[in-house]
Image (cartoon, rainbow, N blue to C red; front, side):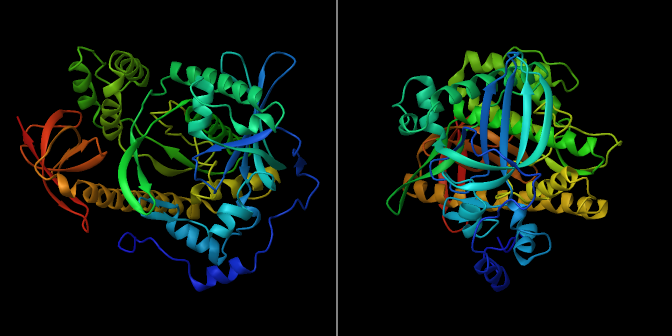
Length: 471
């Protein structure tokens, strides 16, 4: 972390400020609406305590649907230019590793006083959306409110219940109407997703590895599979982020946009598709790419994650940029949206906290709390630090995988090439999910190619896993 310009520990000044914070923020103005009575709930990982968002939904009298996404008002406690804010603006993100989490904010805040914990009254910034039956957004608004989380739910158990393969959720018997609201939100998310995909939002399904422990012992790096509950939250967050971007533009305020440019390696994506006898156009086309991805997902679901990962690598990385109202906007290629910012995770990402401060200024019809020069510098810094954090996460993940593979030297695995450049060629295997360098037999391989590889060497301290291609 230190090599990447990230602070692994909080300074004494940050700890002193944190010690002087004793309670959650309360509404101090009549403009903050009281929405505690709505059926809010959260869905996150089983072990998550830094809860950034809640959602609620209802059917309107005209059969349109209303979706509300409440985002934790972190700015109500973490003020600009404080020591806590300084640490957050340096790291710009929480760093999640197999060995532990390095939070962007002190846990007294992120997992308690600024977290939307179950049964707790909390301030929030709400994205209020009216959605038509076909998934089109009709109207939207942003405002401040007091909310209360009625049920803390987890992705896997909610998804299993929705699919009819899991036990009833314990909260269904204690929170009236919860089951109906979950199903309603699932239905709304589906039509919103279908609408986005019709405009070219990409159907991707990667296998992110999560550490599995038995007591204190690491026993596996297993794939963290997508499911209906994760899709539900993702669809609502994409919508809320779009609403936030357009709200700031309409109010004449600048914003930190999250963009993904048209892929430079589109030619390799076309080549990958041709290997499946599928013809993509010569110029980048998100709608055509999504049609190809859907066809492969249906034809070969077991290997679709490998294809997804290859496409993601070839699409390139997202970045933050300054958007000034009235100037051209780059948009997000993979999501097929023009207006997109990060606003829904202010406990975990600094760009979201910056966006929250801009939104609160817009709600109050006040000036932007950051100059354009500040925002431009923050956009560059947040992009760099996000990449540095990912490097740390990958490095520790490779060390964890090297630990698990240390006794399997000489074994063979099926793999998919995830990177190919002058710096080297990398391949990902499963069982455990791990990525290593192909040190022999990499000639002629490119991202997306499949190969049988043999494990040659591991170095836990350095996170090295070396493979050779075998016939």
